[in-house]
Image (cartoon, rainbow, N blue to C red; front, side, top):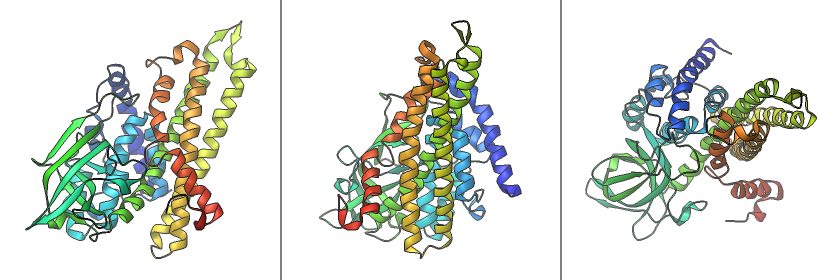
Amino acid sequence: MTADQKQLLADVEAFCQEIRPIEELCYVEHRYNDQVIPLARKYNILGMPVPKEYGGRGADTVTYARALARIGREGTGVRTFFSGHTSIGEYPIMTWGNEEQKRRYLPAACRGEKVLAFGLTEPEAGSNPLEMQTTYERRGDYFILNGVKYLISNGGIANAVVGFAYPKGGGRISAFIIDRNEGFLSEDLTAKLGMPTANTGMFELRDCKVPLSNLLGEEGAGFRIAMGTLVSGRLSVAAGCLGVIEDCLTEVVSYAKERQQHGKAIGKHQLVQEHIAAIEMARLASEALIERAAATKDASNAAPNDAELRAKAELLAAQAKLFAANAAWETADRAVQVYGGRGWSTLYRVGRHLMDVRVCRIYEGTDEILKLKIAAAVLGKEYEAYK
């Protein structure tokens, strides 16, 4: 690795060590961890893949994935903040924003002065974003947006959201950078199975004013921007899930050596070893697939006009996310089983991982949608389930 890559991962390690005791206390107390952003600012990791000229660290995708895997060990809630802020918040502005938009939003986001989010999902539009009901119309120097976005990571704390809407009266979806203003009404969603320390929100756009200069990309290009952003988001989820697997393995190995039952350490019992072997294989396979997907994304970024390479990067991101999310869920379940009664508690890390990681099989592309994408890639486009 280069000196910059090593330093970034060292800064991420320092952040993780400092955030761990705070995260554990917040989890037990079932409250939002308001120290993630200040500590991320302290270690300058709020814009890891953002080019240095816009205030970021300029990390390649492979290094960024390794950083997210390390953060994922501290909990899916902590990693989800970075996915929302960076992977699907900063990324579309980096990729489709004009120079003025990049200068206006990216440095502030890297400094932690603007928290970002990605507003695609709606109450009636989940796996099929084309069914969204949010609309926009132009009035003078503004676009006026109306609609509701639901289950948005960072949605209750974001200063700006990359959001999507149909033109009123019909047409193709467009993307916007939406600043929080009097027409942006948000509510925190706390009735969640896991991730109590992370912010999840919904917000209503009620005659929300968006300056014409905040149109992201070309008008009508919103669906393409959303799908392109989800590739980055899926990679971030996959990397975070690898971190969950790594942390569960560390916890289980330690516990299996310390816990005594039937006159010996439980790590000497064959059925416990079966769990540990399965977790190690999940770690190894997930790591290899994520590294390959991240390297291919870097290659695609370097050759933006190569449609075949872009399609390969998109497919690998879907495969990595599907595999790692399911591997992390199974791993956490096995880890809880090894811990026995103690595993069924938020006082222990493996129990918290089990509660949190389940959502990774839903957001950024459900298992079912990703399986259809992968199958269509094998069978051919004429076999796509949804056109």
